[in-house]
Length: 202
Image 1 (cartoon, rainbow, N blue to C red):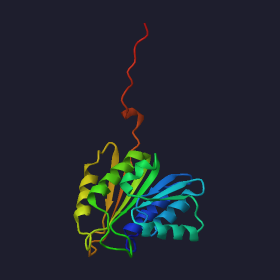
Image 2: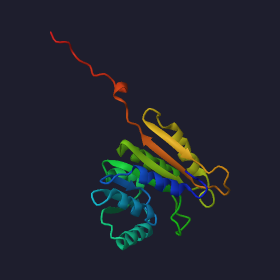
Image 3: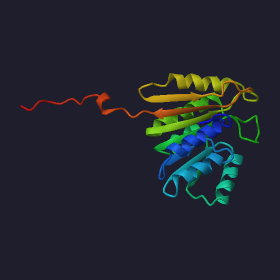
Image 4: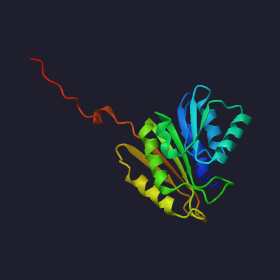
């Protein structure tokens, strides 16, 4: 892959296309303007389901307009915080996050470390085995580094036997280029599972 013309968002979309299957149930935890929601809706097909969350009514409205324009009907829009996603969805093959503020919206309204980390943990709790959580982390400027630092520290603390975390950074680009991270829920080989106790026959 050539990275010259890539960014965090393009890397995330490439991962979606490679791993999301028709019929999957997936979550867009930060609907924003709906572009990720639309892509996810297309990838899971008519047999799949997308649940899209956003705490801002403006984002929900923008997403609904975009989906209607493309005739997509397999999306449930939820006007609520992403850290409450377990209240709406029992299991998902993928959960997608974009941390920061709404593009073109009020920069004083943006995701916060406390609810963002709760949302990541909520996503992991309902993630299917071999599923993934995608994170585009926008930082610097209006939002500063508080959320960036908290999320990275949390990702580093995840249990390696349960999760694999991959972080990509455009290291020599200026002005705080967004980071792309993937958390995979590891499939535990049968040989690593604890043996079931048994009683010998008399």
